[in-house]
Image (tube, rainbow, N blue to C red):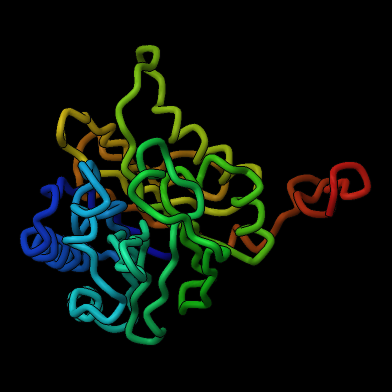
Length: 267
């Protein structure tokens, strides 16, 4: 079993120092609570609602920034941290990125492929597939927020062997019927169930420049059920059996990958 911890934080917009300190403390708290794979929100170092690309550029950092070593140290040996940041790019470009850090892997960077709404005027979209990394707990994958809504991408991650898909997010609150899960959580449940892989979505909280956030952090088992969420606590922890994701046989005669009809809808 693997203990996954998601820290639902409320970063301050464009306050790099505050947010770095906040994230490092959050990693330490998650580790103290038993977290082995620790997930932080999208753009945890900066906040989300930038007024301009120039503002985002002013708090952009590179993969060599000391924050990633601080995350690694706070997590401790054999543990992993996945969190979002504004990555500095060439010229005036910036990327909505995440980093995966651990003491036994090189720092791995992923740039968000699918940009949501006003992100398109701030960020440059990524151009490389998301990473899938072998860890001591199994195959770990990572995407960012709106990426989750593309079944083509989540299926690709599953086909590449992902056992735990981590998803730093910033979900703006939308109306939903009373008693229903946020729609993004339902999408995460579907991705987990149709691919038989665990999914850990770490949302943010609070209100930022008029945007109210969903605070929808959810950890979903490979069977597609939410096993822990932020309805009671912003530090969300669950123990997951990641070995379930290695077996795609769902009945005596059905296999999630073996039943794919590439002859009809492509390989």
